[in-house]
Image 1 (cartoon, rainbow, N blue to C red):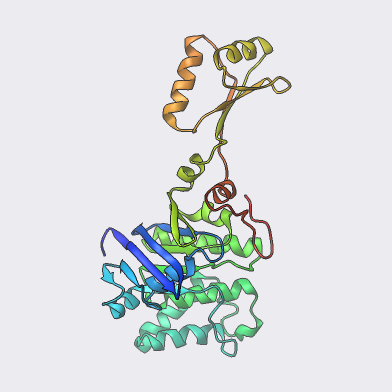
Image 2 (cartoon, rainbow, N blue to C red; image 1 turned 45 degrees about the vertical axis):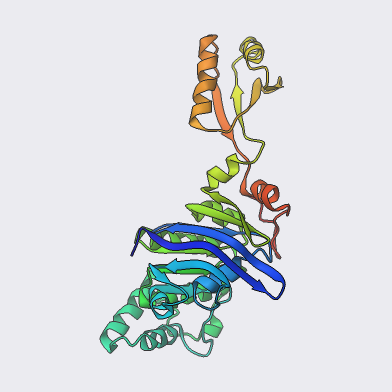
Length: 317
């Protein structure tokens, strides 16, 4: 596999006169979590459908695991796993039978198939429920089984389309731990999610789509620093130090009750160093320093013009 698990250049897709993807570029490093964010209709699902060979693009190029998605579809499909928004499990079968079915479809030998099924049941904490029909499973158990089925063929790149939609907070965090373990094993995850906290917790890099265009890309912290509102909060031991600092830092906002100053800053190391050097120049010491940046909800609003909500809950961090 190349150092880039997924490479996209100038990807375009339209349905009639409606342009869904308008020339997007993506580069997903191997062994990382890459998250696609965007309001409904932004192009997230279409991007995933193109990259997983379920849909042909109208223009541009895309390579997954080093293979062209348009001309090497079999090689792409052999390298990837896909877990959709809704668990694709057979409710009439048991958990073990669902996994064994996937092993048979992958044409594994009987011995290898049984070994893989056993390992996955243990890994996803499904041993006790392995012989029960999936119809009796909770939502979190179904999602775990669905992801386990995706892993039967040991894909090195996994597309997770809203994997925790509808799960309770505990089940969601269990899925997060599973994702982190997969990445630690070298698996690449391309994640679409409705939960901004999920992207913030899991993603090494985030791409924000809006109306078919890539409007921002970077680490979660990079994106937060792009939004106005970042600041450094300095708290002092007494009003004398506060007064002295306020005279030096003329752009700061003062909070007399808290003996604190709020100083506009991008939160980067260079600006922090300059701020501390300036205080030191005037022999001013702050008792406490903290950096405050906008959260991903602020980023989402600034970049897309949408307040990000989910169908069942507000997901601002």
